[in-house]
Image 1 (cartoon, one colour):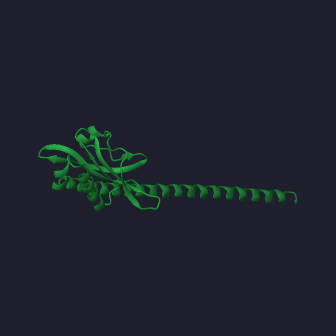
Image 2 (tube, rainbow, N blue to C red):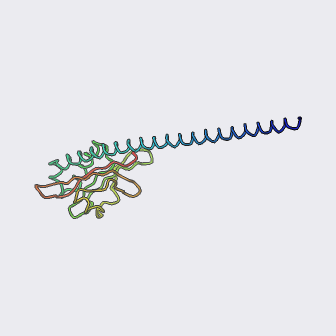
Image 3 (cartoon, one colour):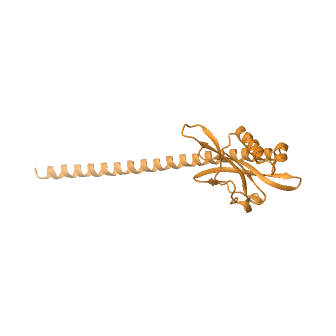
Length: 183
């Protein structure tokens, strides 16, 4: 009779350990699933927030660029005095804290590109863009008013909107502004 007590005790302890292992595994699996659902929810919210902000800024850039390209003062010096166009574009860009301002000619050349650059002392300085004087890479898309949503200059990515500058029905160039992505 004494020999059966340790066997029963061993059976009870074994069942208890098995039950604890099952309980631990189900709790662990449940927490892992809950964590995955929470992460997916946060990513979904972040994506919706980013898309909303991106669309809002895009609408703002679009409206502002269209307003600027209708500015008679800009049109009157356009194609004649590059310095005056640069000053006018810079002043307009400062109004909306744009990180990028540029002008593209009808032939597809980037005539003017002004980029806000962070200096070592954390002050912002407007510098000539590295693509100034080069061909605009998205000229066919620009002519069809289907620019991609992002524009890269070096290792920086911008949300850019260009609007046509017209003299009567003729397009004499495009001017636009952009915000650096992540700022």
